[in-house]
Length: 201
Image: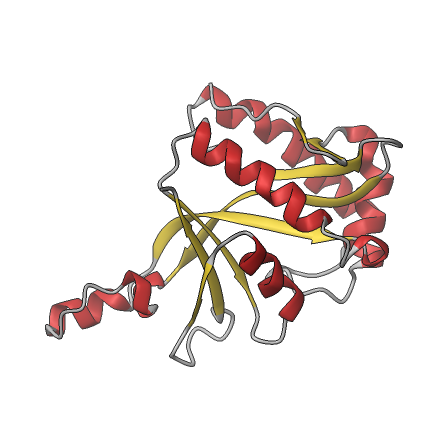
């Protein structure tokens, strides 16, 4: 089964969420980061976040039973206090990756040009941290642990992360992780703007 155990770093523990984390995750995603663009519906009510959390917690085991990738957000906590300061995890990324130079075949054939606009799925990385704990290296530390697990234990070929043109902090994390940053040269889709790519070498 493809479960992800708690991952320990110098300062952090990246662990599965539990239902006891409801108040913390609601505060993080719906209050502290209510204006953040996660490519979803935005901030939700506590009851809606409770439904999301229940689905997230259940998905850990259900995906593992099916031998599927261990998608889902995880809590990032301070090792010394246990305080939840962020969320990170693996997510499916579904987008026209062929539009990016890194993913192109290099051919000028019409069929290849059409294929570049077709959507494919990539194994993605998600991270979101409370403003009080940003710019302290926590996002890089937590996501590095996830990447090491994905490459070392899941034998993943590559991992991607996406963000918007104006999110310099997210791109900074990508650079610190050693990702190659690609910009979508097309206007569409409007939410597909910047992609960080890291190959397992």
